[in-house]
Image 1 (tube, helix red, strand yellow):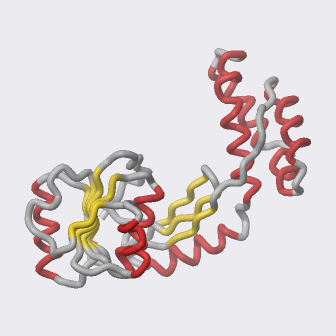
Image 2 (tube, one colour):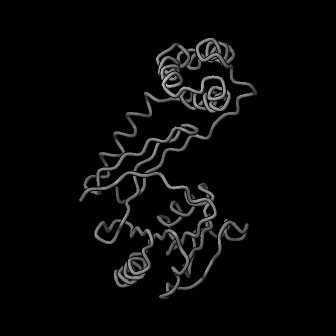
Image 3 (tube, helix red, strand yellow):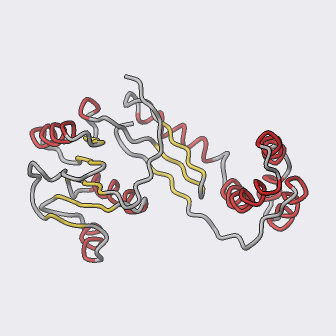
Length: 228
């Protein structure tokens, strides 16, 4: 099977998770972080999920799955160990053309979840197409030793100059050359050494526009989801 890799913007989109156990908990928290409108269908929840439900972080249907629960959903995740329920969820999602992942059951998925490393706006997703999830985890762990907070800081500064750079240099090829010059420069090393102000000044020298404002520390997330 061949997969098309993609990163989804789930903000304000209805996402349904069936199940309230530990596996479901990880999925639900990830969807909340992505600012999705989450609905959870489960008779029982973990302690953490109970707290999130009480805080209004998701809509809770405290019962077992019923046909029709996926109506209006953009994405669905089944995290139950009931084969009949998983099959019914797959059938409904497939009929409605909804993105669906039945955890650890690749034949009943039209998308799979990768192992993820996040450094601010930098997202690295690794998948083995469901064949060997442990390999994806190990590869992600290796990358964690090579990619640090300096990459997140670099992206925040770069994001601050995109608009003024385009205004100053309308020609795309000229901007492209400048971006490669920046990436290949010593700016990342300066950030790695904690010399943020020097990095900001160096970026201005290379690009012709300097990033304004203050740096805010990014959130780093490393997570594994199955199947991969």
